Length: 278
Length: 253
Image (tube, rainbow over all chains, first blue to last red; front, top):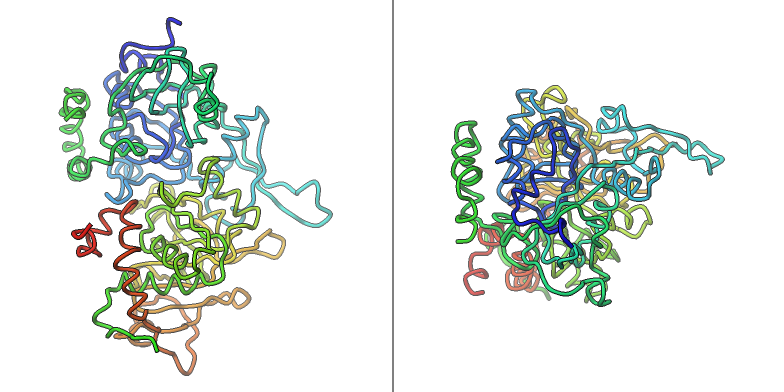
């Protein structure tokens, strides 16, 4: 099984070309932060970033580094640490194109992509400015109703890459995702999924029902690399909590473009692995 | 007879948790959303008071997560009619209960940009008891008309809508919303605050009954549960909130 397990996260990041459409999950699912830093090191540009359904530090760093042309999301927030400074700055100066959505609309678009169908209907949204500003969403009459029943149709989302961090993968490229079932939707909708894991394990995760039910089969996976504490400084499942001190210092640094650049120099283009391993 | 603490013994956050729990009475399934420590605390208190009959989903929690099919399951519950209550805040909320979670100024290049609409443009339509909640009661929050409608308070009759605004809770009062008249009315004012204060700090017209009752405080037993049990449960997802509001409980744990 050569090829699917990469020696380094930077080699995984090298698979993502400029202009790629990528999808990332919400923080509780497992964020590939080390891969994100590797993407910034590589200098990736013009990404179309889809967030299922929201993003936080990952999106803010990619935006601040100038890697994102368009973002489709229901929110960008650092949660208890406050607003996302580089996102706010990029909206303010008009350098980032935003497609505001609502959480279930992104889920629905991803589900349509997963099913290989052109669109998914969804309740809600009618009369909102979210819908009014989305010329790619349509309102249609429910064809099964005899009465007037408008419903919103969301086009399928088919990203080039889904990016996730997970607990473990085997050498065949099967990835243990546990209860994080949205990964199945992300992976199914995307052409390939790039995965970082806390550890690469022996054996085959699909052979045992206990692990197979929570496993993303390798057929969806374009590459996997080991990255211990790969979600740092974010929390990862039950494995480790958020690095509060680091998050607080990020928020302070990222208030200005200069402060953010210093942050990148120190933790992204500099030796971030050493910092993460502490 | 219940033993009631004096108003100044109760922190505002504790009062708000108790009010929210009261508003959830009779629900079978409730969920709190993102960045919602007080609504999450209200849900957990309501479950305790229900004797465990209520199912509570705290978004982002491991211990209080009911979803095994990913984050989309919350939205599926709502469309199925299973989700009885949810919470929405807003950078701006206007007199017709429209909510703005996106920003101030022209869209998309907002002067002030907030995180975004989250699930509001969907859940507000489908959850029968949407409780509007803000920790700030000022005219910059409660405005005549929002700059951006993340989700509307009411809809035209042809739009499928089984849910909507049920109550509005702030640090100074509780309001209700009449969807036919498209207007808020004052339900009660919290101890230490006045009707005048509410009117002075609300940027839209509300109905005020002749007699406005004072909000009923949580009794001492309820307050003890909030401080000793709910505090620890909410700390799992909101450690910074818990450390600020419940330092005694956090230090003891």
